Length: 353
Image 1 (cartoon, rainbow, N blue to C red):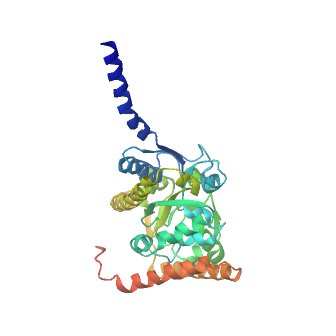
Image 2: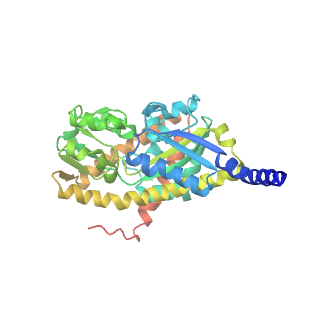
């Protein structure tokens, strides 16, 4: 009898072993550039972790970490390349100073809005072009977030024309920082996301930009500054990604890779729709509150957009003159699709007053 029980117990344990092995097959710790619990953390990174768990049937476990826990907020990409962390979650906006090609994917004034951009990314080759750019650094990337248009600024001072920007201290990053400095005489300041509220509240800067309306709401920027300036011409959309060394990506079983790709794409689609739904509610809340919403004139929006397009074109030309044609090649493809979208998307109903 005892021997039968031992045999039954052994068979039971062996039958369960694959389950335990599957549950522990891949574990990635992924720090991000934003604080734990912030909208980008929840809507992008946590959502990706949940989708990866669901689509791989718990064979992949992703452990998100907030900014500063494993690496500083603005050093996520370097942390991956230096082997300090397995993988990281951040935005190309923080890489523009290292390689301005990233401006195309970060979002720039005069660039595509979210509808056109997400179409270019997934249907017209943009995703593959970003993957090739990352591969040059030995990295594999997964796009896990494309955002709706941002609020141009939460501001302590009103801004309605170009002259108003001159000399203003403006918390921003990426292409917009260059445009503000070079074309409008503003003074860009780059600080980690977790420090933005305090900087604005204490008037360490005159104005800040961060995210879309619903992304900014829980940060409390509308409580720290009176003016809300729209539309988000400075960054009509934006992209966040998970990056890792190619060898980290190569390590898991091959059958998991397409599931992780699908989890990333699902995350991007869900996150953008989530922003759309919450953004209009946030704007309604702002409008009914104590803030003054400034809507820029079409003429000023065009002036800002023209400056952004001029900056990115000249930057690509400068890169080409130095022997790096990657930026100009990707930009040409980007601008070609943008022109097509502008010309032929008027059939779409957008329900705007």
